[in-house]
Image (cartoon, rainbow, N blue to C red; front, side, top):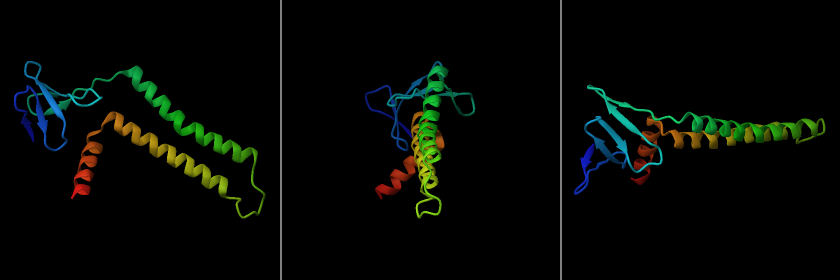
Length: 136
């Protein structure tokens, strides 16, 4: 629920703990305490996300994300290809395990950063519910 903040032209949400400002003429609500410009527009029946997408920044973020996942995995894979372990040794499967761990860990970190950057509603509500559950 959104409640009015005393002596301010702002509102606070008791679920997500963000501060909002309302533009009555444009019928929009904007999050003020976030690095991402999140705006919702009232269409007469429900609130819709008014996406303010900067395509050049979005392309840069996705390019960096792909490089951060693929480059370390490619380096580990190439080193395993050029310097293979001895056949029949106890550690012969180690390069493949290391490659899988490298890809999985980098993919998990980049996925988390993208979720934090884009603030998808399902991710945000899950994060808030997890924080509430852990605080009990």
